[in-house]
Image (cartoon, rainbow, N blue to C red; front, side):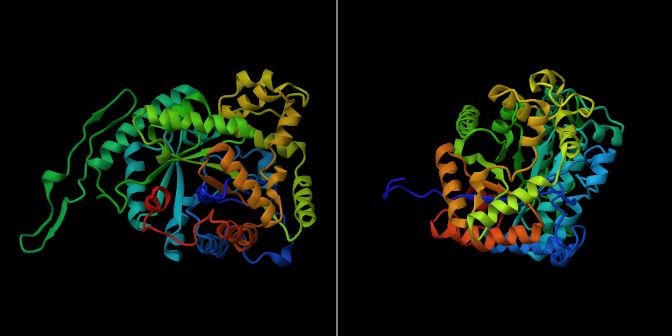
Length: 437
C-alpha cells in the first residue's frame, strides 16, 4: 500500500455457538485451574461480551440450529455442538451488560414460521436498543427436521422458499408504520389504526394475514446477515443481506467471490459496498511465534478421525462414517444436501480424499498466517483484506473463549488500531449505524 493510500478499516465480529466447542472441536479442553466459568454459566458470556465491546467489535455472532450435530454418540461424547442451548434467550442479558456491542441471532426460514420470526426479531431490536441482526439460514441438517417433524426440502427449493419468506417478513415489518403509536392521553388513543395494516399475504409456501403486533424498533428492522456459498446462496445474499459471512477458500477464490457478490448486489440496484463481507478465522496470538505455533499444534492434535467425520455430518446432510477414508470427495459431492459450498470448492481445488477433507475441515486454527505474534497476524489480516476487498473478519475462539477473546482484544486489536485498521470506539447508537455508517 502506498504512503498516500487511504487505510481501509476492518469490521470485527466474534463467532460462537451456545455450546461447549463452537468451532474448534474439543476447544472446551483447557487447564481446569484456568477455567473461571463453565460455558453454560452466565459469567462466561458476560466476560466475552464486555471484552468484545472493549475491543470495539461490531457484534457477537451466534450460529445455531435445532439439532446439534444430530445427537449421535460421537457428537455427544466429544461435546460437538451438544449440548446446544438457545442463544436468543441469552442475548437480552448480554445486551443489558453492554452499551454498544451488537448481537447476531440465527433463525431458520425452513423451521420458523414467518410471523414468529418477524415478531421475535422486532422485539429483540427493542430489547437490545437497536443492536440486533438476523442471520438468515435455510438449514442444512436433516436432524433439525426430525426434531420438528418437518422434512428438510432439497437445497435449491429451500432457497426458493426463503425468497418468498423474505417477502412475508418484510411486509410484516412494514405493516406497522414508524409513527403509528401516538400515545394521545387526552383522547385515550394509543395507536393510529390507519397506520397499521393487514398484509393478507398468500404465496406458494407461506400465508400471513398481519399486521405485525410489534411496532418498529430503533433500526426499523434487524440487520440482515447470511452465509450461503452456493450459487443459490450467493444470489440470495446479493438480494437480501447486509452482512455476509464468506467461506474459507484460496485468496484468489475469495477475491473472485467478493467481486462476484458486489456485482450481484449492483445488479440488484444496491450499492455493492453496502454489502459487508467478512471471513472467519481463529487467530492464535502468542508472545512469540513459537509460543503461538505450540498452542496451535496442541489444539490440532486433540480431535481424531471419528470426531472429524462426525463434524462433517451436518454440512454434508448425511452420515459419512461408513465410507472408506480414501473415498475421493468428488464421489461424495452428489449426495451432499447441506452446506455444499465447502465441498464444491474443495473438489474444484484438489479433490481430496474424505480423510484429507475432514482433517482440513477440522477447525479454524489451521491457517498458519493467523498463528503468531500480534504484529505478524495483523500483517496477514491487512494483506488478506487488501487482496480480496473484504470488509473485515469474524474471529472464532480456538480455546477457552473468554481467554481467547481477551488475548485478541488485548494484543491483536491494539496493533490493528495502531495501524488505523480498527476503530477505537463506536460511531453510532445501533448495529446498522456502526456496521454500515
